[in-house]
Image (cartoon, rainbow, N blue to C red; front, side, top):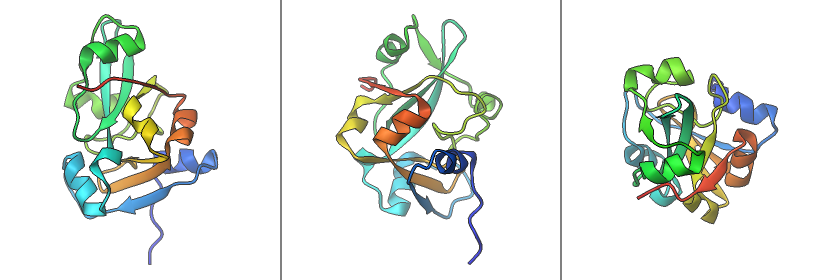
Length: 158
């Protein structure tokens, strides 16, 4: 069997000696988080999507929320000390993060942006996040994710 190509997210976890489980799946185009979770048999409530937003100040922020939930923009803005936050345009994802839509991981982006995980992640020892490319999900201990991303948790979903 061919060795799996490492993504920036995997390399970062390896470098920090963080244990993780990789779940590759067949997919050549963007699918939503629910379909990704279905393909690998991951529970929806433990599966999280990565959203990148821009604050009124022009700064970028990474929000990691359950795949079935939406970001509460007011709560998200409060969590990062902004007046407001808006989703970045799809065409800008690669330029800002180094990842493509559907493969955006909170780990290993081009730059280290503030990362906020929805507080619901704290009820799990491990959560599923994108592995840094379409067709790859990683299961990582939440405690280590917070450490490696220098992240924090807040109630940021509706």
